[in-house]
Image (cartoon, rainbow, N blue to C red; front, side, top):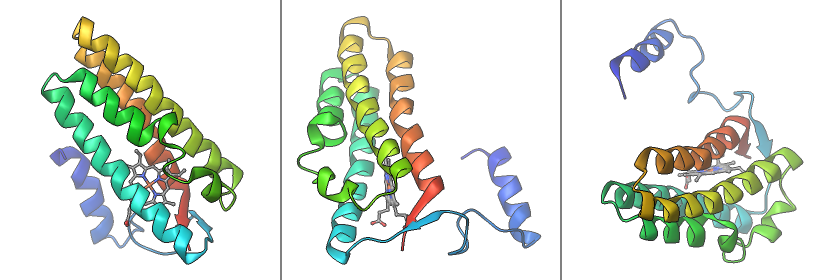
Length: 147
Ligand code: HEC
């Protein structure tokens, strides 16, 4: 993180202003789920982060096809079955479901873009498509938490 983006956070901390990371009552909608679903969803989440991390490494290595494969199988529309998405969706508010669907669609779009980049070597475009995935991670985390 750059200095300039840390400074306001530090200042907010010193002034006792609410930090995004702080309180339970932080404006996010709290979603109730049975414990097993909750554990399953959090395991999926940790795998999502691992997948993003792997994709970044593969892009840096110029291994676009492998990045596409990770995105499609672990985050994309092909991953929905293995994630048990249809069981979990029933416990999610509509907006949360939509953000989840948008993330899976963005991952499948990224996979196509990454495959194209294997030919064009257009890394900036591939990174832009990766941002199309993570924008949904960020949006959902900003709006929802589990109870
Ligand atoms: C549809 C909503 C949604 C999307 C999309 C989403 N998440 Fe999450 N994620 C959550 C919620 C809700 C939590 C629990 C947060 C809480 O209760 O404070 C969570 C928690 C996590 C955690 C913490 C897991 C743990 O064991 O504590 C990680 C890591 C994570 N998400 C990564 C990601 C990544 C990476 C992406 C995108 C590729 C992503 N998530 C997309 C809703 C989402």
